[in-house]
Amino acid sequence: MPSKSARISDMLLQRLQEAHQQGSEVRIRLANSSFHGVPVHLDSEFVELLCLYVDESDESSMCERAMWLIKLSEIVAFSYPIDSWSKDRLEALLNDPEVKSEEIKSDPQSDKNDLTH
Image 1 (tube, rainbow, N blue to C red):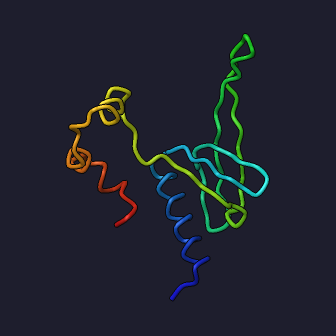
Image 2 (image 1 turned 45 degrees about the vertical axis):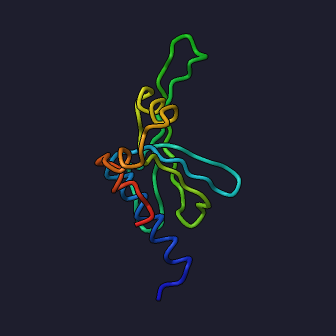
C-alpha cells in the first residue's frame, strides 16, 4: 500500500494534470508565499504557471505576464475551481427554501465535482 505522502503527491499531480488539460487557473501555497496562474507545463518535479495581469493603476493599462516555476515537493496547499454559477443561480440556491438537493444533483457537473466518490 502506498504511503500517505505518496498518495497526497499522486493526488496533487492528478489535480494539476486536470487543471493543465482544462486550462484552469490554480492557486498554489508554499511555506512562505503563494502563486496563481494557469499550468502550462507539468512534470513529476515541477509545475510552470502562467500569470496574466493588468496593472489598473497604470494609465496605459499594459498587460503583463509572469511565469512561475514551482517545485512540486514545496507545495503545501493547492486550490482550483470545481464549479461556477451565475449570480442569479447562486442567489436562487441561497435564498429559495424550496430548492431541493435533487436539483443540485441533477446538474451534469455535480458528479465530476463531487470529491466524495
